[in-house]
Image (cartoon, rainbow, N blue to C red; front, side):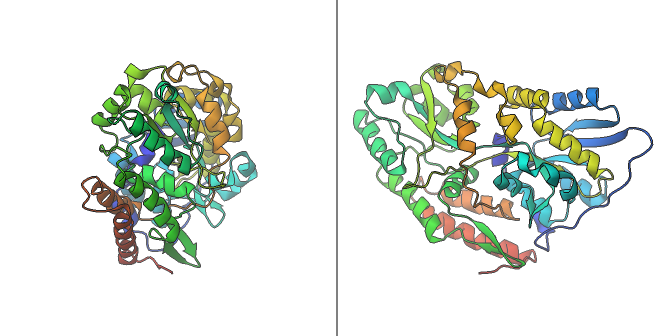
Length: 430
């Protein structure tokens, strides 16, 4: 599924060649006398149908879609190799978490002049995931704001309200354990990209830019606050600690051992597809808030990038914008890939108003539509996310065995990330 792929780690080779903060633009070329032909690499469900819809109505610009292995499973390696050889496609699906790695390696093309006139059709924070210094290198497709998925039947029987704040979540966690000593409110978030969504919401950035240097702040006070919260729930035995995306967790959702999941919009299909026995018993509420800050985190999403060397960047951008905004294309992607569109027109699509039988007839995407406007805009992915995610994942994986803490994991990821940046020739500021 499209959103879930954003969890996947990009190949280390992508970032390894990046020696500057941003990459250079590729070569542009004039349109030929016949139809313009564009090649598009991606892996998300439904992309081929959106391409077919475009080709039917745009005879002068024809797109050839080629399905490849998803990014973290080899797709990004393929893109990188092709770009270095000068054989990259014009268009490619790239997750937001990996975009900076492609930019730093100089593998994307600046299409600001073609995309900027329609900038207002997408939120500013989303454009920040597909460019740098105000420049644009691709078009956003979807976002993945987070929410609270919970077993409404179990909460109701235990007389527990859906928590609106993280303090209320802690109270609810204790109440769940008291109601059923074998049950817990949630599983510990040890997947690095899922955990990133909590840091994102908590205004605890990992990367920044100072002049021409990258800054890394994974062990900042703000990050320690978020880490300390989850460490506290674990130390108090208020959460389970199954491996992320594991069958044991899915069984716990289904049986009622785990009552809730705070996750991105694509968790809706993840839970539905892996806990079929509890259909109709789940509901969705807004992500709990920190104090009075009315903001949420994001965990996933991707864009249609224009690769370096594309001879027809204007036409490539035109297609990318169409795919993310055209009613038929967006309707197809909502149905096929269960996306939450990034564009304003996409968010107005009536397909998002449909009730979901698995969630008791609740029109859950209406909630995520509203929450998407509240995503914390102060987040930037770094250019060595393969290293960052690996280091953080290794550390978080040790927490259940009590051989490391969340803070240890952040400290290790901080050190590993800075070392990787320096080793690859990036300037690192304070």
